[in-house]
Image (cartoon, rainbow over all chains, first blue to last red; front, side, top):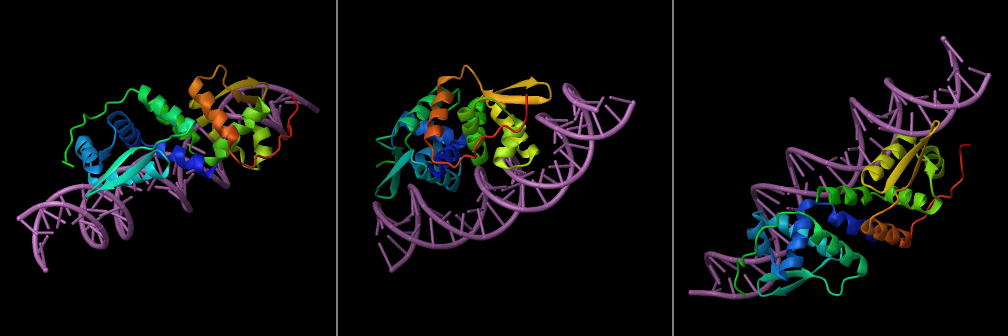
Length: 102
Length: 102
DNA sequence: AGTATATATCAAGGTATCTTGATGTATTGT
DNA sequence: ACAATACATCAAGATACCTTGATATATACT
């Protein structure tokens, strides 16, 4: 119940839906990739990523000074259904342009 | 997108999840049924029902002075998945006891 | 060591959402 | 017509969430 509400709560924000779709579409990205693609300040992106991670949608892997966020794998059926549903949504997603060299 | 957020927003509340599950489990019920089962005041229940209805989960049918809320039928696949997921949740649901004679 | 970069976290203000109590509307019963 | 019942809606206060700007931490570079 609590877990479900956390999952739903993570989806209850337009910015997070876009970030989630962005990562689902582009694969592992670092925070500054999202920051520059979305044109939002870093603390805001970082917070949303944490919420999505805590809700079980994302994983982080730290490499050097970068933190790469990716869709968690394996993902349970329900979250997969949600990702698919989000992929159908009509949203304008910013274009991905790698901002940092790993 | 907007529609999706409305659907998610409707689920983002413990009381609404319980009401939704309650109706899913017990079939069409009137507002006072829920009111007496949940021990919540009428305006609160009424508001939550409206949100669930506007989000596409419920329908209302008025009979005399009662308003019967039921799971919308047909229900799209995504909302069906959600209802199923909610049915798995560990929540303590109040018992149904018809409070009004139709 | 010192500086710059990438990310996380915190505090404060703004905004949305939930709850309650009061009021409005429609239907039934007398 | 009047009273009672079932439900919807509104206003106000409480609570939770989002955004921003500042600060903290950790890694890389020179």
